[in-house]
Image (cartoon, rainbow, N blue to C red; front, side, top):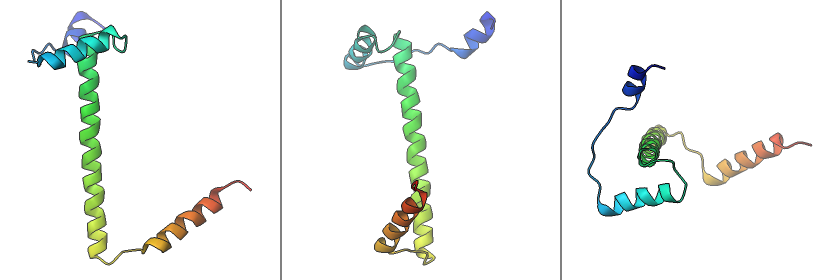
Length: 94
């Protein structure tokens, strides 16, 4: 990878942190969890992205469930549990 590609991959950005946030980052590096301040920030952003994606997925599933309920496609609790238990029994080695 040449210098240009590397420079494009890690674009510099200035951010303002509270003293507590800065201390937390420094502590993570000092304890050896991360190699640099930037690595701590990148990991935090990666986790935030995962959280946002997870919430969007949950919202989609809830909307699907509401649509199914409105369409009358419901299963009562005992029947649902029995179906799950049956599928577990079928999948277990004999």
